[in-house]
Image (tube, rainbow, N blue to C red; front, side, top):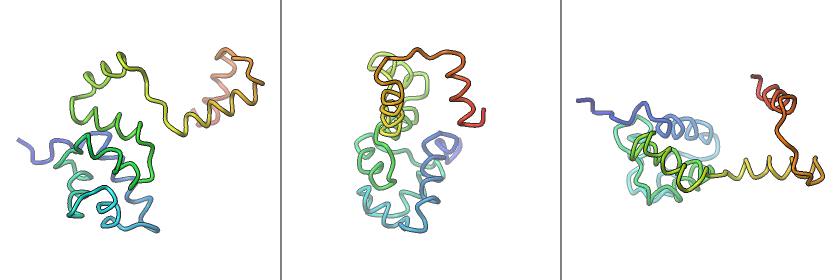
Length: 133
């Protein structure tokens, strides 16, 4: 049995990336303290996949990582109950919308003069182009 059962989860990879991105302005010890962890090693354990994030820690961890709580909760649910079960939760309760996605939605509404535009193949191609796809 592996000692890092969560190392391949999207949450472990995300926390690792955010800690690196925040390194110039926030230490790992500061992130741990803001997330409510007494020991900064807990962040290391989450990044390495040897420990998972307790769901009740998600809001504080999201704030500490300067991340969207809905997105972090989605990743934490995947880690806690598995991707298939997390997808079932989303199917029942709906897709969480992040703060960033709300910004996109507001921009679309403004650009379309609130006309509720359909997603056409042309507009999908434009979105894909924005992201280099």
